[in-house]
Structures are given as C-alpha cells and as structure tokens.
Image (tube, rainbow, N blue to C red):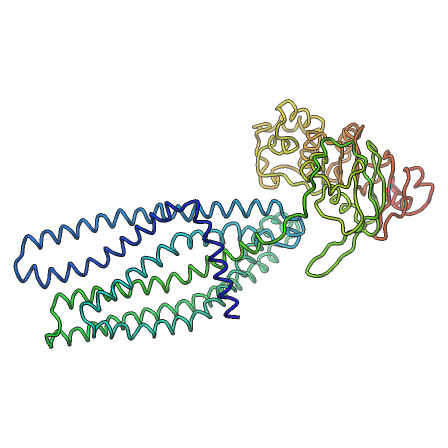
Length: 584
C-alpha cells in the first residue's frame, strides 16, 4: 500500500511538472528570488557575529557603519524579492490553475452524459474550484518554500559546523527525532485528508441540491427535513474536520516542542562553552541566530506537508476526471443539412450504474420518413425519451443502429449531426442570462429580427415586451424569474430559431395552460411541415394529427398507426385515450 501510494505521488509529480513549461521564465525568476532570500538569511547572523566580536570591541566605526548599511540594503532588497514572490510567484500558480481549469472544463464538455448521470453537481464543482485552488497553491508555494527551506537548512548547518563542530553535532543529533516523528504522523495525515476530501465533496453536493430545490422544499413544507439532512452532512464535516485538526494539533505542537528544545539545547550548551572560553560572544550570538535559521525551514517543511497533501490529492482528483474516457469516437462525415429520413434498426439500450444494468429498449425497429410527424406514446418506462436521446448521440446504442438519410449516425460528426436536430424538452433549462441570450442558443449568428420572429412564433414576444428591459431582462438562475410556461415558450423559440430538419418535442407543451397550448400547438404544427418531427407526449390530444402514432411499452412496440386506426384497434391506445377524455 505504501509503495503504491509513493508510486502514485511520483507519477502525479511527473505529470504535473509540464504545466510549468509555459511559465518557465517566471518560475525560474521566482526560484532565484527564493534562493537569494535564503542567502540573505544566512548572511545576517554572520554580520551580526562580526559586529559583536570584531567591530564593536575594536571600535571600528567605519566597518560598523558599512556592515549596518549592508544589513539595511539587504533588508530593502529582501523586501523587493518578497514582493516578487508574493505577486508574481502567486501568478505562476494562478496561470497554472487557469490552464488546469480550461482543460478540465473542456474535458467535461466532451464527456458522455453517463458521467453526469452518476456524479453529483456539487462534487464536480468542488473539483473545478476547491481542488484546483489547492493545486494552484502547491504550484507556487511547493517549489519555492522547499527550495528556500532546503538552501537555508543546509547552508545554516554548514556554517554552524564551521563555527563550532560540537554545537553543530548536538543540533544535528535531534534531526533524526524530527524525521522519525514526521514519518510516524504522515500516515495519520494521509488518512484524515482523504476522508476530508470525500466529506467536502458530499456537503458541497448537498448544498447545491438544497439550494436548487428550495422551492420544492417549501412547497412541501419540508424545510425541517432539508435542515436535518444538511445537519447530518454538516455534523459529518465538523467531525471529520475535528479529527483533521486534532492530528494537526498533535503534530504541530509536538514539532514546535522539539524545535524549541533544539534551541534550548544549543543555548544551554553554547552558554557552557562560552563560560569555558570555548567560543566567543559573537559566535555564540551568531550560532543562536543560525539555530533559528535552521529550525524555521524545518517548521516550514513540516507545515507545507499539509499543502502538499492537499495539492497532490486535488491533482489526483483532477487526473481521475481527465483520465475518464470521452464520448465514443466521433464520425468523420459532415452531414450538412439532412432530409430527416430516420431508421431504427434492432436498437437495444441499457443504462448502466455501479455494475447494475437497466435495459430500457430492446430490439426496437422503426422507420420515420423525412418530413413525417411520429408520436411516441405509452406508459412511463417504455424508453420514449431515451429513444429521442439516442438520435443526437447523447447516449450510444448497445446494439443495432440508427441511421439518418441512409447513413449510420455514428458516421456523422456529432457537431454536424446535432446542428440538424432541435430539441424541446419537458424539463426546460435556461441559462443565467438575458431572454435574448437564451433564445439565441438556437442560432448564435441570428439577427435581432430573427430572434424576435422566433419569439413571436413561440408566443412569447408580447410577454417579453412587457418586461422592464425587454429582451435584455435577466431570467435568473435556471430561469427562476419566469413561470413554467414562459420558460417552455423560450425553449420552443430556440427550436424555431434553429430551424432544424429534425425536431424532437419531448412533452414540449406539458407546462402550458390549455389556451396557450393550443396556440403553441398550432405553431408547432406549422413548424413541423417539411420536417421530421418526433413527439413524445402523454396528452394524446396533442398527437391526434400525427402521421403515425407508436405505442411504446417496456416490451417494445405494442401498437402503431394513425389515431383513427389505433382507436379502432381497441387496445392500449384506446384505453389511454378513453381514460384521458372520459370526463369530457
């Protein structure tokens, strides 16, 4: 286990190093500044010892003034170097963080939807924010602090041996104690930090879910339930954080005690040497200062261990996502504008989660002629929406094939394929932006006139014009400032603007009142002319005029035909139709 972890960490470091390459000049300058600061830290005690032992007793005023002025210059230069470290050193980390965030976001954009089905939004957000911040801090402070500490540590030890071998040996004898204790505590650190990462992601996910569902919670008067659920996670977080701080407290307090004892040992031994005339006062003073110069880097190295663990853990989580496969291989054919002749041939599909397989479509075959309107109806769980998701390749079929215009859709590039498909779903998602921006999602190159025309055809223009800022009105997160029907009509306007040859309407009018539904249905009927339209609907009144209605059940296609033909069959469709209209 230990060897595997060490191998993993070495692999992570090797993988991380190339991210410094674009910022190499700035990084090298940062390292040089750290090295110069370390050198200055080693010079101060030497000059101080010379002042005490030589310049002051011998009344060398000129030398005293020169040495004092040199110290002042060093302090000023060191201040400038520290500014460079704090500003430009951090910018190295920020720029690396920017690169990592861009890579991660780009990778997420191209990952299969199954990843988002199986991972919580809060956990994904934690990787984009918290993890990358910790990596950024490690990218800056890691090499800088390690170099500064090592140079100061080694330099101070060499100089102390030069001053007095016996005092240096006394100091050196305590180093193994520090190493052994650090090694002992390392395992406990690793365990609590791994636990903390998991708990942090879970609580982020719980908060994201609670905030997104605040209206549902209030509608069901479930605030206390949500609070109780949150408090369980919060308690788990506090408990885990408490264990983390307990280990930190034990480690840092013990380490500080060892370092203080190191100073105590040198002060006591040095004092005895001074009384025995083995060392001079200046050497004694300089040695005490070098002990501080020696112990501070040890403290820094032990303190940075927490940051290294955070950074490496964060980078490991980053690599876990980056190593996940993208959507299956893209096609090579740019399909241009399709006619819309769709054929399902023995299609089967299953959702897979944690080893569990849920077959929702089994050996489905169907041909939809270009320009035809086909409705998919039937009980829930039959795979109607899933069939619609397979057409734009949101998911890949397990077996069989789907072709458009006689070509397997897997041969088309996803971009060109999806440019030919317009989708209006029951669960409308609006981006946090203006009405104009959300409609323009259908065609980013559309003119203002095109956007307004699409809104008119979706029966939303008149309402937009009543808003204080018209099309520049912000809809809020997920369209929270709009009603369900208004959000649905903006989504429909997107489809109008896109003007695709293939149109998928997944319960597209489900959130509308009856009067508005009739208006939108008429517009959708007009839009469907000359286009292949697939309608998923539970309201059978919206599909009566479809060219063909297919009744889909978990077992497959149960019935198909026109409205009149299916009513005459007196089967599943007739039963559903009678149930919906029995009170009319």
